[in-house]
Image (cartoon, rainbow, N blue to C red; front, side):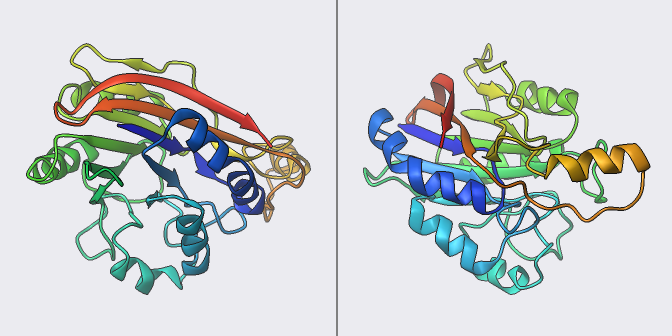
Length: 260
């Protein structure tokens, strides 16, 4: 099985580059299933039901989110009824939505997708992501041994720790949130594919997707500033994971970087 995981989708530029390139990537690499992080799909902050449907129609089977999951209030009711839109599993129990889901490829193979969120330098008060991951992985293994984890976190150390914590227990642990792709894709000793951060799918000439002038102004003045998504050409950053669905082990992992 081959799974493509698209890094943080930033506003209209990110959605546009997916619309223009995803079908080519899927065909070229014989991708069986596509996942993407969509917490920044709506003008850089949050996601709406309409944009979730748009991404599903483009070919995404599952959308993960993160700390911006709730930025658009209209998503609160939608996420209760759409199991393919995930929020971190370690949010408190009263939060709407689910942190994991099992989906099937067109060939009938099952894949579990789980999202947890780190706690270092993150704004929310959350359950321990390691304990939550252990609990959710045990639940997913009742249906499939093939499991991919989105570790949405700021600190590289926390992401790396999660990779080693779940090595041999899941198929892959990949990071989202920082919008900058890391060059450390690898298969860990017990068979789990790992990359610290997939990177963003959005505008190239920007500061992590935001207009560079606005980001620089905030650094210079330390004054509050409303951020806007940068215009211009975009790039798709993703990771391609090849796995043995029966064993739940990774066979290969490679970075994908496609300019618009």
